[in-house]
Length: 252
Ligand SMILES: O=C[C@H](O)COP(=O)(O)O
Image: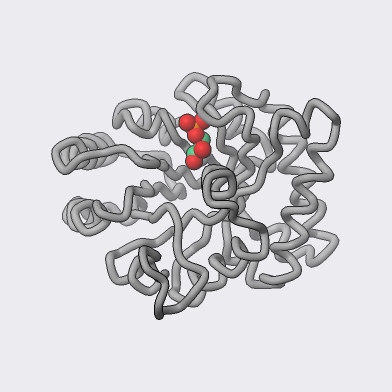
């Protein structure tokens, strides 16, 4: 069975003081007891990885870990400003988001590069969270499956059976930070389509890959989303900034 995985993505938010308060509040809440067999993580901005890594280690909850929001497609060398996956591993990351739509939009990242980043993350012993999803225009013109299939096929071509060790996050761009959540059935339909596409490559890979939903997940819609058979958890943006809301989603 695939474990339910809930990952917070703070994006470019936080401060030394608010991070410490967040980790303390979430750890205290989780110590009261959490549903069994789930995994939780929070992806924090790079400058805060050392601080949050220490705080999360101190709280010693086997099911709570830390992640980063991006990694370089290169191993090391003359890439000013980039951060290698091996460095993220040294700081205690277990997950790394790659190909988030905000990276694709603001930094022109393309699918091949996203897959190269995922390979770097895997080679450093972490789990890549590979983001895919269509824009509002693409959905309104009925091309959402075609668009996401195109993104997934590039990942399959480069990652092959190493995809079994990745997570995929389906994040419709029109639902990110807008409050317009995809209905649970709409999300399930896309997750099913992704899993069927993966099964065309390898049924074993398809059954192992966790597919998370991201896009305006909140405490009040998480239960319905997570109950869907092909939704294996969530990638949570805005709501993960509140430790109380993040906890409520993790308990959904
Ligand atoms: O990485 C998280 C997603 O972009 C979702 O963000 P959101 O929950 O603020 O819509």
